[in-house]
Each structure stands twice: as structure tokens, then as C-alpha cells.
Length: 376
Image (cartoon, rainbow, N blue to C red):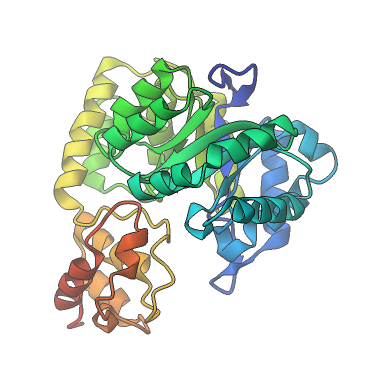
């Protein structure tokens, strides 16, 4: 495992962090984590050098922190930093902050959290946290030894990101969505460099954009092969992120034991500024190619759920995207036809759009997709 400096702290973080939003489940139920497999995966990663485990209150319908607590019992807690997040959408007072944080400590079976984030900040949720004086509460927790370092995860535009970074000079780190497709999206490359310039550690989420970059079409793979690449699409996408000196740790939401093994191997050969110029140019060409054929910028994070009418929005977008990227709309129509609840069940309430970190026009896209795929 390779290690990197974590901002202005003395913590040396593993290049690979374990994101726990996509743990293996049983029976297709996101709330029903396959406990034995998940424990095996997390502990194997730690045994092989990983020392940063990221979780959050809502993951796996509020069951994830409990699983992480079980995984890190005993010596594993001493080997690993825990990062978890305050669910800002559930907070209306400092009393709520206390209650949620104490619940999280109990689930995690620990008396302190190494890295505590405000979860999925945008302009509105940040302004609410300022009104509630979150930072005074958080500083009390730091003074009491219950939190070591403060940070935030982010889903909005760069000017909002900059204003949050500048507001508080004791931030330790920021977590942003970043991959070779998203250099100009949300915080993007500007945010990465700005945070680094302020000596903040930068934690990367969605390095594979919800798995999309693990399944690139043949036309894109050929672009990389022309540049001399013999790596898998996953290895290459991760190497692109690790190539950048401003990146502190890359989170991977691993769902199988094989993915853990592979990613640890990829991380062991990661390095800064290792990609050649022709390889970097290939990423630029691949970005243009994928953006030209991928119609919906959904990462499959699931924040839009649950839908009041039980529409599985990310599944529908995934079917639609794959139909276009892999030039197989007939298969997409077949897959769409098997769905129990289709996009035409949308009642246009807009609840999903208020929660979508990508700010997608979900209602309009569901209507469009049903018109294209609904006549299987």
C-alpha cells in the first residue's frame, strides 16, 4: 500500500480508502447488508494496509455505521481512521447534532471519530449549518476529544465550495466528486487545487463515477490502447486520480471481495505524476467521447430515493445510459420492461430533485426515458 500526507495533519493516509455506501447485500435489499462478506472485505483491506474507512448515517438505510462498528472491533479500530458524516438534512438544532452524533458513536462502538464531515453540503444546507452555529458545537466535540478533525463533503458549484473553504480556517479536509469525466463539474479541478492551496487534505469520492468508468465502451478502450495502456479500465481510472499530487485519498465503494483485492493491488502501484503525456492526452480524448454518448449524468448514489411512488430512479438511468453508451437500446428496452415500476409512475412531485447531488432534471428525464424505452 502507498501512503500520502493528509493535508496539514501528521496522518499518513493509505492511497485507497474504503467507501461503504455500496457494500454487498442480500436479496437485493439495500438495508440488508451481507454481514459476513462485508466484514471479510473491510478487514482484508485493513490487513493489507488500508487505514481510512468512510461511512455515513444514511448508508444502507442507516445500517452501515453499525456494520462498520462491528468490522473495526478490537485491534482494527487502532489500525484505522473512521470518517463519518452528520446528516445535515435531519438537523434543526444543536440538540439534534448531539443526538445524531451520540447515536453514531454508539453504532460505531467507539468513543471518538477521527474525521467528521458535514454531509453533502450545498449552498442551502451550508447556510442552515451556519445559522445553527454548527462550528461552535463541533469545536466543543473536538475539545472533548470526541472528534479529531473537521471537514465536509460537497455537491454544488465551485463558488459555493470556495466560500465554505474560506469561511472557517480550521477545516482539515474536504471530500469532492472527482474523476476523469468530472474535471469541470461541481468543485472539480479548481476545487481540488483551491483546497490543496489552503493546505486541506482532499478526499476523492466517485473516482469511477458510480461504476460507469469500470465499463467503458470498446470505442473508448481503444483510445487508451492507442496510448500504450494495458491496464483494466478501473486501474486506469484510479491511476488518473492518484496521479495528481493534490489528492490525499481515493474512496472506492467496493461491493465484492474481488474488487477489494483488485483495488488494493492497483493502489500498491499508484504514484504521483506517473502517467505519460500521451496517456494524459488519451484521457482528454476519452472524456470527450464518453460525454458525447452518455445522456444522463447520474452516478447511482441513490440520494434521490426513496421515491414516493417507488420508482427506482438510478436503475432506470443506468439502463438508459448503458443502452446509449454500449449502442444497444433494444437490450435497454428489454431490461426496462422487466421493471415492476416504470418511469411513467412519476407524479412530478420533485422530491427527488431536491435531494439529487448532481442537480439533475429528474422529472423531465423520466418522462423522456419512458417515451424511448416504454414500448418494449
